[in-house]
Length: 518
Image 1 (cartoon, rainbow, N blue to C red):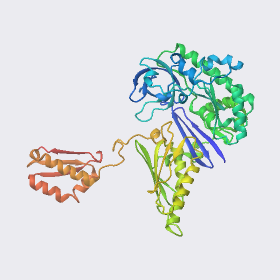
Image 2: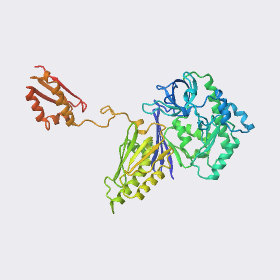
Image 3: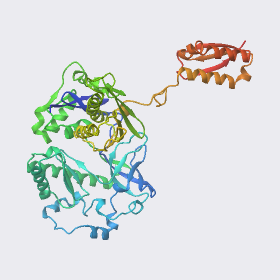
Image 4: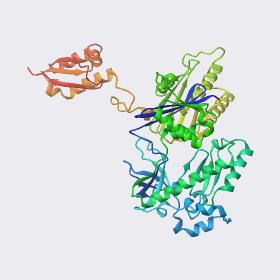
């Protein structure tokens, strides 16, 4: 699979596009005025504990208090020694663990799922100072989602300083390699802290894995020291900026090259790759063309396409994507595609083509939460199964976790996709100030009837007077044409004289009814 990482870095905005086989697969945008905070670590103060919701609000210095759910809270270990002694299995201490006791915490930590249920009011108290990490950016009207289960990602490993666990990325499919990496990490890691082996670690030698492990442990040690004297609330650790995060997380062996259009950022990327990814350094290029980089690679057009509700398929069919506060609905239509043989075959082909486009659009637009897909109805159960299996296969490349339910008899598939940041639509757009986010305007006919009813309400003040009706030109045209009879009827009933005036500066739904002075 040919893949490229294209980075457009300006002082006001940085955009990162992952291009697979000539098609934009993922798009990341970060603006200087609104830098992302996911991954940042803060020293915060609990401002409110909500037993009814089993959650708490924590002040971390942002505009809105951050949300902390009970499962994201570690037990207060010093006050719960008995629980831990009962829950922890006996194990021998490893001598090489001693230098990192401080870095990983002097006391063992455990996944909450292994411990008895403890309500949040017994874990936290108002006014308590805690160290938290942002797990999800603020989304819409919601504050940031935070956790006390801190993780520090590197190129090959993710350090979990408060959990004694070793995991291996599911994307490493070779069982021998999975076992080699797991055993390697288990042999060299300190006690009482955990690691996740990332996909990029596949094939890496022990020396490189150990060097990164030591780097992450020292980083955690520094974070702990910094937090001891930090004021509350305050930022203790800032994650890498979007350019270096893209290099760390997306610039893998499967990516042929990284192209960036900013000299300063190019030098920064080179320095980062020399330190952490020397084997990929030769794949970094500085773009020096006169045409904007996203235009040169055909990405700008894809960005605009990702903002459209309707997406056309090659066959002539299309999908419509509608996002609401609660969920995203996707509708599949045959459009101009009429097929060659029979209706069922035409529908199946359209649905299968739509599956690939839907999977691409979910990644590109970063659509998360509940997603309902309304496929075109198919009579054969076997065809429904084909579409369901095709969708499962199409989302395999997606790094965000997805869960797909089988197609219902109505042709609907319900699925969820993990939401960690704002969608492209929410990042690049804002609610229409005309319709206030409704996505629709009142029709000219509806507006004419509203005006006529308003005249009836004010008939006492308008009786026998000259009345000026100021409206948008399109509404004025309808009042003087299709609705002229109704207007004249009111004139006669009120013994009034109406003057309709089109105002180009008026909003479509704006109108004013005033009495003209004689």
